[in-house]
Image (tube, rainbow, N blue to C red; front, side, top):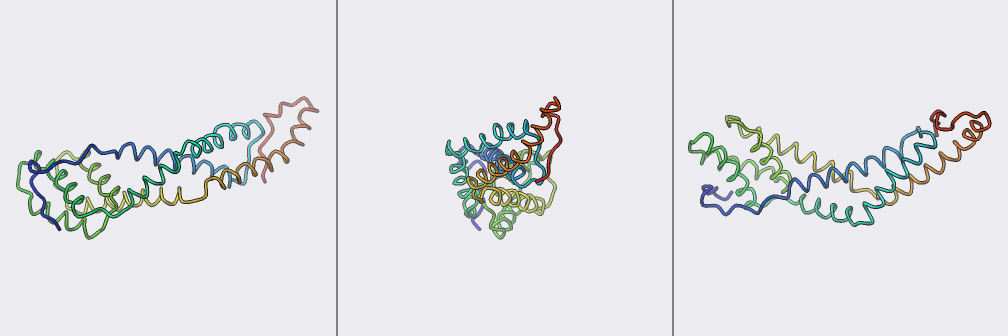
Amino acid sequence: MSNVVPINDTNLPAPSKLTAFRKDMQRANAIVSRLREVCYSPVVPACIDLERIEREVIATAEKFIADGDLARIRKALEAASRPATRKEIAEQVTIFVGCILSTLGRDMTVFARMMAQDIGERSPSVFALEYALSKLRREMDQWGAPISVVLDELSSAEGMRKDWCESLSGDVPKLIADTKAMIAKARRKIEPLAAACDAKSIPASTSTSCRL
């Protein structure tokens, strides 16, 4: 593992795009998860809710693809999933330990070297490395915790990344098509109920959900 140099001798990396990346991942995951929830639910709401699904869920997903956001976010996720290099690990540990030094004012050279070595043995993705250390850096009041705290945070970040990979790995256009087919099937079941409601002068929007 590369030696971790003092913070004042390091050229700090460019400002992180981690926050924007996380927002993109959360937005993409929310869109795809909502599609799956609607598509695979055994219960479909009444007609008025089907229209809302078309307007809010399907239209949002179609725009997400048409604008190129899905392709862009998948590419960013793939880049963030590569293993961090020794240099990247050393940089992040240097920044992290530098923050601790400014708080505690003590020599942490050995601690920094061993942290970098232990992190390197985990082969974290670049996302997990930056996310875990930046999260701990922002949350810490004073540092007296073992390196295992950092390793646990790395594992948590990797779990988050893997969830995003799984969520966005499917065929989203097919998922949209399946959702549209589900809505069409639901309408065929609901329309006779709506007609019966109209005949009795009962608002169709008050009809109950139907099970497919």
